[in-house]
Image 1 (cartoon, helix red, strand yellow):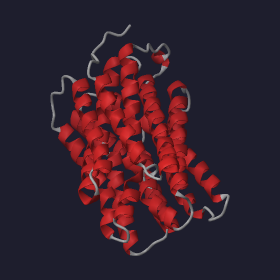
Image 2 (tube, rainbow, N blue to C red):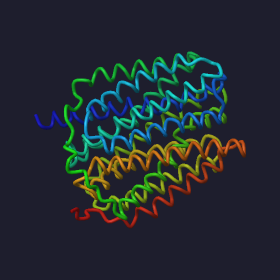
Image 3 (cartoon, rainbow, N blue to C red):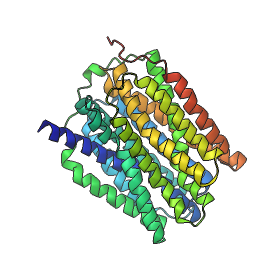
Length: 383
């Protein structure tokens, strides 16, 4: 019975992350080429849309850190809002006001995803903290969602569907998944009264900054992979294959992590995975054609959710009496990095008509993150 309950928690968490991350946030990636081709936005505006999403994510994460009431309401609102916003995106007009509506919806989607992700992660840490395999299942949701959005986008492209039709399909599926898990969502979350005095240590700052640099590094290929592929393979269906491959790499990376039963030094693992991520970002810009995009998709996709899980674990070990506060702070750092990434991209495309400078800076950020987290000592005594 205990195993059944824990498995239900893991699957509910996974599906929640499918909705708010894999679809609510990352459905934008396969949509960007359609929106640009249809004349709804420009490439620079695409970067601003991504930045608006991550600004919402940043503010949502900050707000969740200090929230003491209505936590379950936030979690559920974030879940349902993600699907509703996806569907509403189909109604955006193709006129001068359309970009502002797009920015608003992406901003709201960022807040929704942060609410649900931080609170679901807290639930997972509380209920599945020592069950490595089920934690891996719970955190595999973004990868599953990316595969789902990628396959759906590929099918709809075969039917030459418009961006509006895609948004409606994504939103409908997200709402159906939310309905399926509605009864299994948590009724309560861990008491936050003991988290009122959270001590930020040097190690906590190192982890937060490293995780923020990770956000800056991965978000460029994660947001613009489909656009890079469409530019290199115009009109070819192979261009639509890289995004589901990115999602498959996420699942493979999480599966490889799941079989590692004895990770005694998560900070060293984390540093190594940061280097793998940086190599993947470099591949997207230094290796041209199919090989470069494939290598980038596999290395970045295979590393970014492993980084999330290892970071959450290390953060919980650094602050075992302040888990939700620590996860919120880490998510805030991550979202700052994600916000910087698209702004770098917008500046890069505006000044150089190329994303290469932004990708090079992002890759450097991953390697700097590795240097920052490697010396962290977990299991610090608290209070």
